[in-house]
Amino acid sequence: MIGVARGLFAPGLPGTRFEIGALCGRVLRALDLDGREYDLRLVGDGEMAALNRDYLGLVGPTNVLSFPADDPGRPEYLGEMAVSLDTVAREAFLYGQEPATHLARLLAHGFLHLAGLDHGPVMEALTEQAVEAVAADGQSLPA
Image (cartoon, rainbow, N blue to C red; front, side):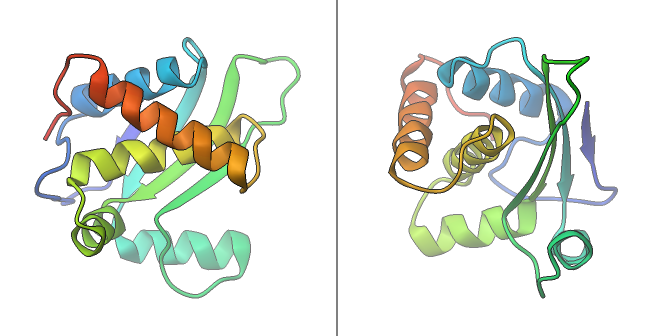
């Protein structure tokens, strides 16, 4: 399920649940996680800061938070993820990237956490491979 916080507007990023779902599907295919289920909530910096504080004890917003599932009865369910579109847009500007490309990168990063990977060279390589595969699949990134 994909949820979008009310009143959230992020120029240059996918704007509908359908577009976001399609992008997530492309990222999951690129990571060989096609068909896996997940819950995604797109939020602003305020809600992300609250999640970051409540679950990690950290101050301020972050770009993505992943909460892997621990349900042996549902092996197809990866877990829950929250992405701050405010942070995605800000980081894309700072890094000189297209916002939709940066969103694909953060989705890949988050899905890899849900699949059990930790930060490091393997995660970085798989994340970049997924972004390249999504960019090369012949479809434009939604904006």
